[in-house]
Length: 476
Image (cartoon, rainbow, N blue to C red; front, side):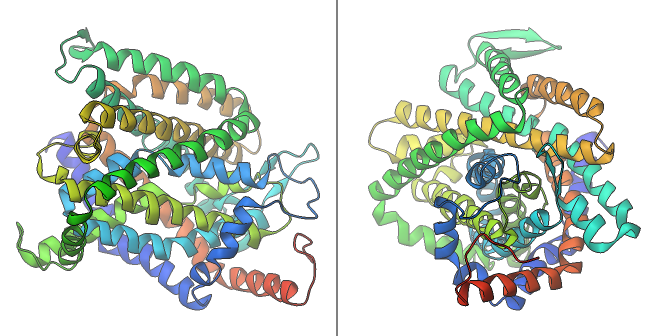
C-alpha cells in the first residue's frame, strides 16, 4: 500500500459514519435544546457583529470585532473556493446541499464552543488571554479530563502547521497564481528533483515574507490586519459570484434541481444511488466543516482574546460567521460552478472555480481568473494568519505558558508556508481532512458534556435582557 492509499484509508475511517453522526448530531441536539437559537437570534447576531458592546471592562487583547475577524480569517480560505469545487466535482452537486445543512447545525455548534471559550478563559495581570477547548475541558469538565485537553491542543498544533493552516492555504494561492500567470507551465525551474513554475516559487517567497511580518507582530497585529482585509475580500468575492449568477439566471433552477437530486441519490452515479448519496454527504459535510470549522474548536482560541464580558454575545457573533462563510460564500461558489458547468470540465481545485468565474462573467476568462486569484490569495493569506494563533495558543497551553516552544513553533510555521507549494496537493488535502476530524472529537465531547452550561448561560443572558438589564454587564 502506497502512502497516498494509506492516507485515503485513514481519511475514510476518520470521516466515516461515526464522525458524521457526531458532528451533525451534536448540532442537531444543541439546536433542539436551545430552540433553534441560531435562526431565532440571527438578526441579533448580525447586529452584535457590527455594534460595539456596552460596558466592557477592558479584559481581553483585541476588540470583539477583531476577534471575530481573526476567527473569520481562518475560516474564509481555500475551503470556500478550492474546497467547494472539490466537493462538487467528487461528491456531485448534492454535496452542496449537505455542506449547507452542516452549516445550519454548525452555527449552533460554533455558538456553544465560542461561548465556553470566553467563559472558561484565563486572563493574566497584563491582559494576556488564553482560552479554547483545552481550558473548557480542563476547567469545565474537571482536572481528570486534562489528558483530553492536552490531546486537543496537540492535534490543533499539528493541524495548523501540517495541514489546514499552512500547506493547504499556500498550495491554493500558488495554484491560482501559476494558473493565471503561466497556465501552460512554460517558465519553470527545477527544485527538489521536480519542475515548478517560476510563479509558484515567487508566490512561496512573497507570501512567506508578508506572513512572517504579520505573524511576528502577534495577535494585536493579526487582529488589525484581518479586520481590514476580511470584510473587503468577502464583499468582492460575493459580488463576483452574484455577477455570475445574474448572467446565468436561466441555469439556476436546473442547478438547484441537480443539488437536491444529488443530495438524496436520485441521479444515477457510479456505485449506485446509495453510493452517490453517501459520497455527497461525506464530501459535503467534510468540506463544509473544513470551510467554517464549526465543531473543530479552532475559532474559540481566537474568540477567547476578545475584549468582552459576555460569553453569549460573543458566541452569537461567531455563529453568524458560519452563516457568512458557508451559507452565503460557499453556496455562491457552488452555484456559480454548477450554472456554468465548470464541474464537468475535468478540471480540479481552483481551476474549476476559475473556469466558473471566467466563463460566467461577461468580462472574459482573464478578468475572472484575476478576480479569483486575488480573492483566493487574500482568503488563504488571512487563514494562514489565523491558524498561527491557534497553533501558538495550543503550544502555550501544552507548555504551561512557556513562550520558548511557541517561538520555535512560529518559526516552523513560517517555514511550512514556504515549502507548502512544493508538496502534492491531493496528499495535503487528505492530511488536512484527517487532522480536522481528529481535532473535532475532543471538542465535541466537551460541547456535549457542557451543553447544560451553554443552556444555562444562554437562558440567564436573555432573561437579563428581557428584564431591562444592560447588555455587557454579566452577573457572575
